[in-house]
Length: 102
Image (cartoon, rainbow, N blue to C red; front, side, top):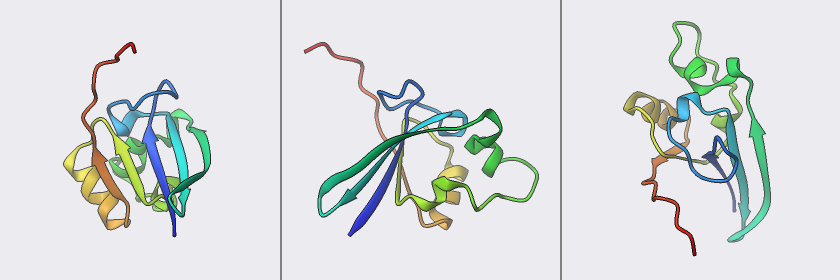
């Protein structure tokens, strides 16, 4: 089974808040419990989720994020989470921990 996970990551290293304004996403493809591909998607300002799902215009259901299986983010409004659910994307808000030095 193939699963695609998108993670909001403004700095391309850690999970960041506000999925609607995020320009960068870490994308992981998982097959048979192994990561088979990882990449970074960089959006243009007019491609952000806020423009895709909140503007008073036709909703762009062709947004590439609606092709992922799971979206992980530090924050997202309930209406956005519900919209993702209608697109068959499981969106999860995950608690962000402070950076730790090991």
